[in-house]
Length: 246
Ligand code: TMP
Image (cartoon, rainbow, N blue to C red):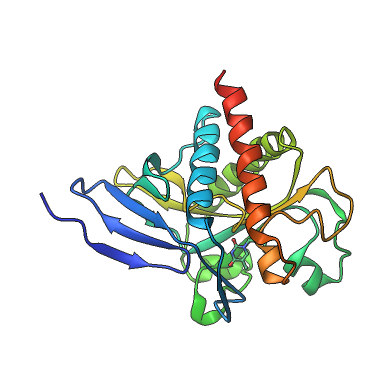
C-alpha cells in the first residue's frame, strides 16, 4: 500500500492519492479567490458546503445517466473521486446573461438567452483562462472534434437536469462551469465540482438584483452575507435531495 500524498493543491481544493491507484481524495478548502486569484479571502464553512452540494448534484446527475468522477464522501469536506486526466478546458453553460458575457458583449444582465450557450475557456491561469474558438481548440489539439461534440452534448444534458433540480429548490440556474476528465478505461467523466463557487444561482423568491445572488458573485462583488447565502443553497439542495430519496 502506498501512503497518501499530496498530488496537487489548487485554489479551492487539495488532491491526495489513496492506496487505490484508481481513486483520489479531494479536500475542499474554505479559501476563496476571484479574478484569477487577484482577490483572496475565506468563506467560513465553504469547504464542507461545496463538498456536500457537489456530492448531492453528482448523485442526482448519475441517477439521470451522466457519468461522473464521484465515489463518496468519507468526511464532511472530503470527496473520493475516480482518478481522471482532466481535459484542460472550462466548459461554461449559460441560460441567462451575466458576468463576462455581459462585460464582453454589452448584453444586459438578466436577459434570458434564446437557447443555452456553451462556451469553452482554456484552463490556464497564466494566460487568464481565455475564451477559445473551436478553431483555436483544434489548433491546440486539446480535444478531437468528436470528443468536443460529446462534451457539448453532455454539458447541455447536464444543464437540463440541473435547471430542473434547482427550480425544485426555488433557485434559477443562471450559468455554471464544468470540467471533464478521461479515466483509465478512456471513459469521459464529469469531474471537479458543482457548487456556489462554480455556478451563478439566483434566489427565485427574491426580485432585488443583489439580494437574489446566492453564489460566489457575493464574494467577487463584495455583496456581503456570503456564508449565509452558501448555507441557504446547501439547505435547499439537501432538502430537495431528501425529498427525492423518499
Ligand atoms: P463568467 O461569467 O465570469 O465567465 O463565469 C461563468 C460561470 O463560470 C459562472 O457561473 C462562474 C463560473 N466560473 C468558474 O467556475 N471559475 C472561473 O474561474 C470563472 C471565471 C467562472
